[in-house]
Length: 391
Image (tube, helix red, strand yellow):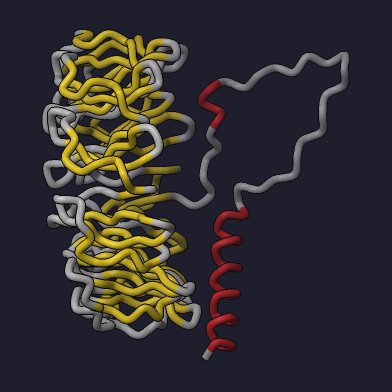
């Protein structure tokens, strides 16, 4: 079995290297000292792809024929595509509704998309391709909670969807807004602000995680604990490490071992594991003696600690590795498929990419082949379509 797996993986590795190999070229000869090299135009930063990208549906049929040098997943019914050295946007029918004219472009979020304009800065366009916010910023993040982070030199602030600066650049680091709150760092300490810039939690922590289960993991001086939405201590800073609460419990480390604590800070699963992380579906991945398994919030074993790799759940399925090959477990820890794939990805919209001997295809949640491996490269589904390269 292992001999077959090693042969299988070598074949798959070779295939992936061949896919990537098109980007590898010999270095060009260096110009002489007397020669002043001319810089290529910015749009020549990208070379045309010899194999084009398009989009398939859940039956594996081409819905948008391969014609793009690069592309991204659909978000808000639009997708970023590259034609030559410029980026634009198409709709679900493959119509180029925003011309490929940008140096860079990102997904739509809350009706606006970030774009980088040649020889200018970064701004935001609406779904008609019109500038809602002029390209004047050095850098910006996608809109989240009707706010976007912007960069001014080495500091960060926030603008609203009209492009108005609502929180001036003053933070050394800053995260996106979510549910009316954002984590920011000032003078080396982390706190949390509201959309008007007022402090919800004063900047006094070495580290601060987003709100999860009404609490925030925080590091103060040398220990980890938890605070509420006002920054008030709820669980003392007594742990050497900790992770966020999920389902009323959180991983915490004491004397080098991990267990689960409740919201009083008491261990409900004693610290006994080398590592412990939330995996979704009220399951936690545990690591012990170079193997992985699943437990529930009471510490009951759901999947034996026998897997070489074990990842979080997506749509009720978790990829696992055993004997060098990959399969999927359900939330009861029962294998949905044997370990038979060279690679395995999370489920998205009911399908998951899996590595077959012939290449990458898709399986359904019962482990049946939904789309055979007949593409040079293919990515996860989003809004009913997946980007792919034809062989």
